[in-house]
Length: 249
Ligand SMILES: NC(=O)c1ccc[n+]([C@@H]2O[C@H](COP(=O)([O-])OP(=O)(O)OC[C@H]3O[C@@H](n4cnc5c(N)ncnc54)[C@H](O)[C@@H]3O)[C@@H](O)[C@H]2O)c1
Image 1 (cartoon, rainbow, N blue to C red):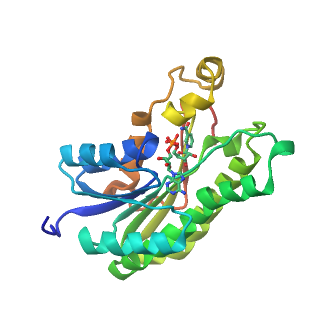
Image 2 (cartoon, rainbow, N blue to C red; image 1 turned 90 degrees about the horizontal axis):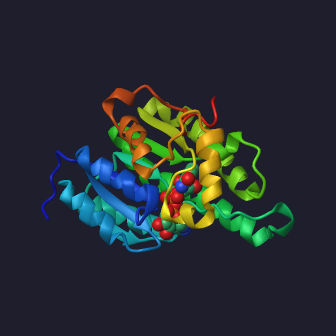
């Protein structure tokens, strides 16, 4: 397909399913071409992106692998052009008590949730800096502001994502690159449905949230769209909760 320089390019990690798939579809509807990275094939997401009028490049990429991430970034530049918006969404959230949490499991959560953000930003930020413009959106979680058991590694990793977000916002601001975090509440993705029994969803909806409606992936996409838009050009270093009021900051 011929390179259309008028179109903007968004890169989304963890785009095969769940929230990353929804973000990709929304960004395509907003006029972006999409580059998708996941351990799994992103065929269904690509079909949705193309149906929305966007070009789609997808690759099997382990975002904890520095070499694979660099190779992916080179392919994005070659086939779609420079990255305007980077959404670091790939993540894992195992539920395991601290006593049972092994160092290997803890390290894997930190690798997938935190190191991947570092590697992806390193791979795409030079192009943004050269062009004097860019948007980086890192997915955190409302869990960082709660006192939940059995999510020590996850909580630590997403706190680190917010810390990295603020630090990068400070250093990249002079280059007109915004860096923000988005912290969803409990959202019905396939992974999350499999991990939480019905009573948890009911409890969160009726007792934790102030708006008693279970969050769907499409409820988070508007904030991603906003942060990628011109209207958000002076929003940086922030962590936006989209959680029906379950945690207020
Ligand atoms: N679902 C929720 O309620 C919720 C709430 C708050 C935050 N989040 C965060 O949103 C993100 C997505 O959550 P989800 O529920 O859609 O998850 P999901 O499991 O549905 O999707 C995650 C995707 O990331 C991919 N992935 C995992 N490790 C990877 C790796 N090393 N390299 C490349 N891809 C990898 C998976 O293959 C999968 O397609 C995660 O960062 C999660 O922590 C989710």
